[in-house]
Length: 208
Length: 382
Image 1 (cartoon, each protein chain N blue to C red):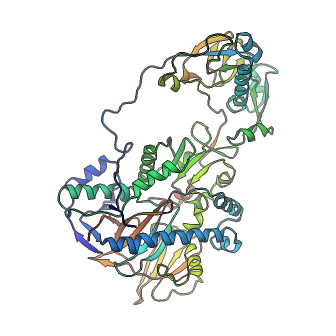
Image 2 (image 1 turned 120 degrees about the horizontal axis):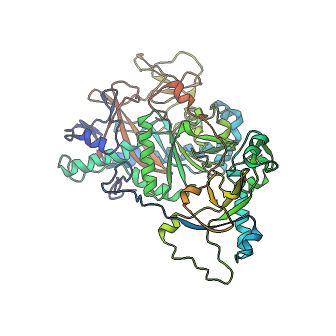
């Protein structure tokens, strides 16, 4: 059992002991080209492969119930999105795709219908040069998620993300800043469900 | 095993703070104490501590397999019945564990005696794995320790290896309660090591954990698929989000089955199964009768020496008050901590995965080790 040493070879810290001169790259964010469409058919009409259009649409549709803004009543939802433009929001079960698609149970909330989608990755257009420009490290970081789009009651031309960022007023290619279109779950989480025992016992540590 | 007086490194407090050790002093009293160190022989380390640690660990794991199928034992450990199946599943699905610490009474001779397992939320990790290690290297460099002095402390190496091999969900979250500097220090240290092992780490305060339809979520509402929680399972199972533990698609470190081992009820069960084992003390579930001379009473759930009652062989009673009065008790034969100078010393022996990974020493002026007990470094020298 005897080794040469009984202690660690090194004990380096990188987060607790900040190294001098390590500055986060805070360069200005570059815009990224994406495509927006009302439907997969429209997407295919723009010389995109139908299968890729369908895949992007499906991806957006899966994300839709997770990111669409939620309203306590149909009326409140229709105030923002127009009469007949809202639907029941399902219960969100975990983060597992299989479970998610099975969960058709209504949560009691309402959400706007999906009115289009944004294809984040450049679709490879049929017959045309498909390779996107050099996928550099910075391009990889700034990839935009394929996601559902919505249209408000007062402005039926503009495509908006779930968090109400306007991205285009017509189908086809457009440019966006990735951070502005990062999808976020819309549901309100309950919080503070853990920690009460520690507060009650007021020890200096909950470890030992 | 001996205690050797030593000169503290000049300015060590400022250095400690510069490397994230913000709890080196506790309520104005020293917590980290380098005015002395303990010295062991390699034989003592390997034969009396390292090997028994791995054996005791294996015995404890073997016992888990028994307990999850025994309603009687789950009941004795006060596990709420609605979590029995989840505890069982977490064990039978082989949910991986990261680390633990067992506390031993050992005086340099004869077998070390197991006092308890801290297998859910062990702290003093940073002090052991990092600061104690740096102390040794510093003192060797200064010539304040004999050349060739070593330390039983492969904690950081083994933790880094474990994080690299655990196959954790990414990003992996780390949570501790908001107002504990000590807990935050432990979690920061683990995150730092995990980061070095290539894990994508995020911190979240325990109180900020969210629940959406039974799924644990972070502050942005994203599902938490992996969570290290420096918070006792027995607390979590009685709080508002208790049912989320079952419904959430989350890998927990430590896994739920660890609630069986961090429970002091494991000690009478170990004694029952391995009666007479040289590293075990006679231990039983408490029947409420008066404590005899040479015995200790401890709550099933307690930390930092709280709510412990002890009667010495000569009949002297020691009692430590605390907030853990709402569970059952066990009684254990007293294995008095050895006294060096004016202090009683307790050995914490670390386990990472299933390997012994080093020791830490806590000193107190009383026989009951508490959260305010001083931490002293050690060396191995033959």
